[in-house]
Image (cartoon, rainbow, N blue to C red):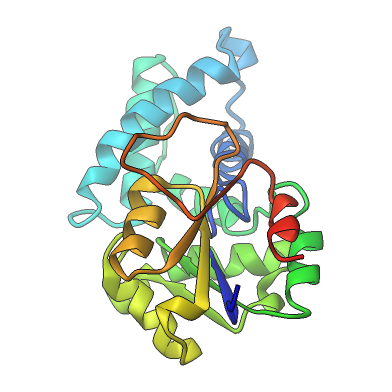
Length: 231
């Protein structure tokens, strides 16, 4: 293999997005002194309802600000569960403060990056907001590993758009053939990498069956397996 660089997805590849989000959702309730236990509501039920509304509202992210989307998600969830809070305008700020400083790493991330950085240039391509992605990497203590960090908000293109991949390649001054991309999403990561003819390593941590048309160059279910590929 003649790779000169490895580009990583961020959420659910290097950082565990689901756990970071869960921490922020529940942490916001705690900060507002809302006790689910006192109302006989489990965390699981609250999260299920919240995430249902959240997924609906985030489809309108071109219309509303991130704070507004979070506040709408809380308001609908609290209303459905008959929980009352006098003021919701600050919930978005609290949520982002917690979320943006969450640093739940996927297993063995630091070890893998430490080893790979000895011989390869490293970069990140991530969909999301600059105000969230960069602080989360800093909180996790991994930002120093990466020569380039490309965030969709900063350039106006998001995965799987090929433009965001070409932007990263231009920052590294490399061709697609010189780079391996590692990510957990066939829809965003694999589709985007394929469009620019970049080899793809599928981080399939849930051991899901691949659709017949998906043919990643490599597939791993643990990030440590990357070190076997680059022996």
